[in-house]
Amino acid sequence: MDLLGDYRTEIDKIDKEMTKLLEKRMNISKSISKYKMEHDMQIFHPEREKIVIEKNKGYLENKEYGDLVESYYDNLMYLSRLVQQKEIYSENNIYTKPYKNDRENLVVGYQGVPGSFGNEAMLKYFKNIKEAKSYEKFEDVFKAVEDGEIEYGILPVENSSTGGIGTVEDLLKEYNLYIVGEECIRISQNLVGIKGATVDDIKEVYSHPQGFEQSTKFFDKHKDYNLIPYSNTAISAKLVSDLKDKSKAAIASERAAKLYDLKIIKKDVNDLKNNYTRFIVIGRDLECDETCDKVSILFSIEDTSGGLYTVIRDIKEFGLNMSKIESRPNRNNPWNYIFFVDFDGNLFDVNIKKAINTIARSSKYFKLLGCYRDVKCK
Ligand SMILES: O=C(O)C(=O)C[C@]1(C(=O)O)C=C[C@@H](O)C=C1
Image 1 (cartoon, rainbow, N blue to C red):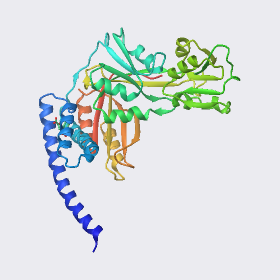
Image 2: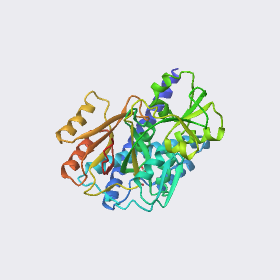
Image 3: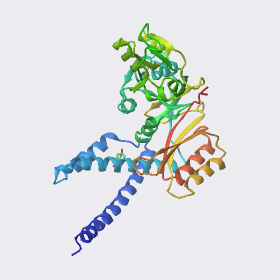
Image 4: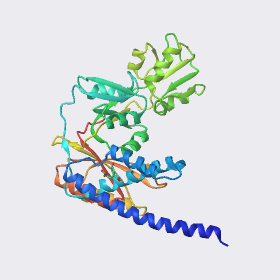
């Protein structure tokens, strides 16, 4: 008796039914996207998603599968949203909300603590902030924007010497939020410690991994230092200040040193003196007006040899001036990649609209991340 063969036959039958149902479900999802487009509604509907998950958990006979059903529907609705995104941007109209010019007097959020680079970027971008909320993790900022706790969040997305900030890029893919602006700050990393500490006293150094990565040449000369990764450069400075120990130092900004009453033991330890970080401002709506001159998209392609070429060819044929292309592993699909592309343009420009429609059609997944004002980052 071929028991395994029998089980597999049974699974094949179930899969066939499930695939047919999946196709039916995605077709309905496409129709919903049309409805939403006509009624100016957002694709993402978190309340509805919660209801779907709870309802289906309730259908279970074996409640042990509760978490499994939750994760299954979570993923299924994520895919359903991607189908809707692709459908919407393959149409000729792109629905945008007016660009909010007065970015003043708002409740905004960043990751870190006062003195962090995120805090610095926030102060540079927003004027007369009504309330600034700080969050421990990048994802907390995304959640706070999604829940309406803050109007906008500001997060680092790219450093000129170490490249893209992968965690933030992954979150841009996962959350249904948009890039509505950007800011750029020059990063100067310093070795900071308590008053009286010298380069020779130091045994342990705390910082965000980016702080270490941007200062490798300095640490090559100090191989005896024990490097301890921490969630944020300014939090590391605060820790060193609290510990009051001459053998402990942090890699942080001059502002953080001042704020936490530390001295700069060695200034500008970053490898490249022209070291900049680009920050993005995220919001709930796709905002755009004539003053916006940069578009960000993300897409994944079919696993075929010419997949990426097709999209790059589209970009070239529409004469788009691409300022960035970056890839991230697709966590839902091993050895498949998500591409992040920025190009000059505005969503009201017919050529840009056509380009977006064409790229959306030739990619497997597509998401329009935003249209905003370009800030030259140097
Ligand atoms: O019900 C909706 O509004 C849908 O768009 C469908 C659907 C789903 O696939 O079930 C997809 C996206 C929403 O976030 C919620 C649910």
